[in-house]
Image (cartoon, rainbow over all chains, first blue to last red; front, side, top):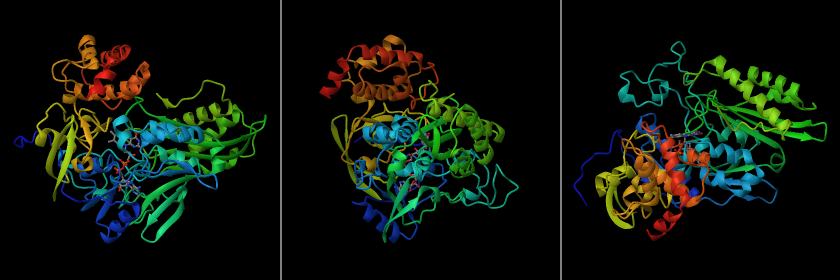
Length: 348
Length: 163
Ligand SMILES: Cc1cc2nc3c(=O)[nH]c(=O)nc-3n(C[C@H](O)[C@H](O)[C@H](O)COP(=O)(O)OP(=O)(O)OC[C@H]3O[C@@H](n4cnc5c(N)ncnc54)[C@H](O)[C@@H]3O)c2cc1C
């Protein structure tokens, strides 16, 4: 071994204890006994950068690296069961997922680059921290006081507001799983419970997840009825690669018969607010109608009115609203007229 | 808290004693002394630190060394035998895919993994596979050309097989 030459550390990763439990049950046991000092590390692709820039400072990491995910499967009651530890590469390439819920494979395929997807897990994607231009900077470069989310007493983007954090939740898979009506299987010391993914996000940038400090997502269930719906996902980015979304839109529709009557609809919009947003009112407007281009345009306008965009990463509120409308309209049109070559999967 | 780990880098086993907050790239560069793997952003964005973990490209600057205990790692030093270049490396030379060279090790590893999985990728598949590797010099065209050029011959697969 050569002498230590230290050429490789630009950002400092603080010290922490490190444990590698042999099961998920042991992992939540360790979380519980740490009394809130420990945090799970799955792929670490969100966690390690956040620890390097000082956004989070856990005393201990409970690493899931020794555990291998279970293969995706169909349960006795027809639900598609995904292990939260599945990597995004696994999800993107799984024939079963591509067949049953192609929008999820598509969303996973558009997270980061292949190096990220090979490590990043589905559970980690759903539990990633919120982002803002201030927060995701290394603090040493900034010479400013910490913001609320870093334990300080101010907010740079919203200086007038008190103790509010409007950092944006940018998961690509969350809006898709919302559109698919997914259930999360949450594991803790007291066993498993099911949580509707609609109820999992708090909308509070300071604590975006409704997840106890000794709980983890163990699996994700997609009900059988959703597997039969038509689905669409768009991630709007400025370059088209290795980027977080400006806006993402995930839609699932039940379209029946030659009249294309809409029997059920779920519309979720990601990356524009502290949590993914669901357009419940617009969904009600579309159900029962025979779908056509005019309806698509009208519903898209309603979705854009209903979901409130926070300006983020340099994009103004008005621009984001327009993006929501345009991409919702294109998505709906592509779903209503599936033969048309209008699948804007990643758009420019 | 330091712990003993074993990294199998380019087929050679290295026994290291590292703290849990040491990243894989630090272990590779500082402990093992292989300096081909670069550190660019140190935040998982630029791809300069790309290495193969069990054959798959990953970012060694946001992966903890302790997480790789007992696993096989390929760095740029392991892509060829140190005398002859791999097919893809030759294609980079032929097509002018290298300018300052800082992104090149990561590009070669991402490209090598792509060609192993898909020996005849299309342009957009190459671009997608390289999206996590930033290059500030070439404008990417020559890099993409190089990967396409290397894909015409699949002899690199045998190169990899021998490793
Ligand atoms: C360059 C770059 C680009 C990126 N691009 C995107 C992108 O386009 N879209 C996107 O959505 N994300 C992106 N990310 C963020 C991140 O890589 C992904 O969200 C990834 O899926 C996180 O998964 P992970 O397993 O690495 O999570 P980790 O980093 O291991 O964990 C993230 C958080 O989730 C918690 N956690 C992990 N697993 C569980 C679980 N099973 N139960 C409960 N809590 C858990 C951890 O405690 C931690 O708080 C990017 C990151 C980088 C560095």
